[in-house]
Image 1 (cartoon, rainbow, N blue to C red):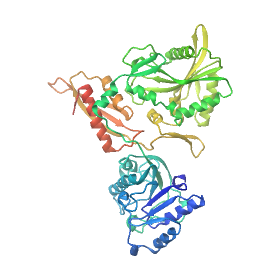
Image 2: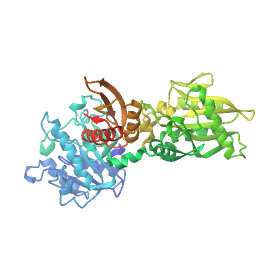
Image 3: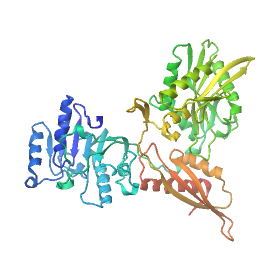
Image 4: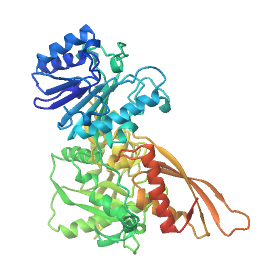
Length: 536
């Protein structure tokens, strides 16, 4: 269990040690690996006369192992402890916290919330907080004992109050700590059911800062964007995505798949276009552009012709078997927030490139143990269209070419339904227990928060304007939007609208109060300011 493994020289704080039996096994575990972190071990109680004989023996033993033993340490007030307030730790570990007694879920949530707030002040910048809970308590998908979310300790939300994000979970491995016997909070000599426990690892995330109205209005201003047609003006929805696209992130799923693609072409002569090419849907800018009208099948030929013409106008001496380029396609904004404004693609030109990519896809799908593709005319499909293969004619020459949708391929292979998860920095690929590639998102176990917004308008309102505003100010944190009702009051010259907005963030730690603040002070204010509607 690498979660608990600490390197020599790391500073580790153990809090809530009931009888210090975990500390003994923790030290023995690291000694067996010839690792020697600096350990501080603490408990809440400070009255030695009330300590059990076992607890006193354990304290004396770990003192001989050069462990700092601290008594009277409140896990919810670490930063104010005179012995700890000037120290910084790389890991802080709290195993099976509990306030004692039954039917005290709110108190246990407060315990976690206050612990994270206090621990954050004595944690190094890249430090980790590790919390083990009994199966079912945490309220995450890692629990095999399923409870209603409102019947759990909601550990992810409690951590989010201090801007911590959940990075990974794993089962609590009792075999590594054979002598560990957990006892209740504040000296209660009652053991918890540690078998089947879940270990949660948290790291400090980015704070979601609510900007001023003037700053948010600046997002609607057009900005230059470099495309294969030259510099064009577009909104920040596109420029921000293009400047932070997954091809620039070596650890992204899209880059991972592109690296496999490169290896599949390693035996042939390939010219890679280093610059990332960008094509814009004509509806993405305020100005008229000479670009592809849409992404339907009939228009792929037109798109590939544009790209081919651009590449060979910039590289007239290309004399290789294949040419491969990374490509970003900017979609027109949709009412469906599950459709990305910008899509990662790969374009391949060269004789027999269709068969080459068929082989690549087949090997890839087998690697991930997915259903094999089947073909439909020039399209290679799984459950969804992920690649188009066609021939284009340019200057009376027929050129074979393929367009591969890397985003869609990544979503299929890594079982991810939301493009925002794949586009968020901080995710990475690792091998799972079966040896298969697995995508680990930046934040685990994200939650959807649902709120309604109602407003009235003097009949100048249009849904296109409404969705455009939401894309510009909160497109990365909106999961979906549903129209609930339109109502026209009698003898009034306006309409009332009510929409339901589902929020989810793959970038920031969210909790209910923070989302309410965003709903009121970002969504509400900007709709009122830009659309001139009256928020109810």
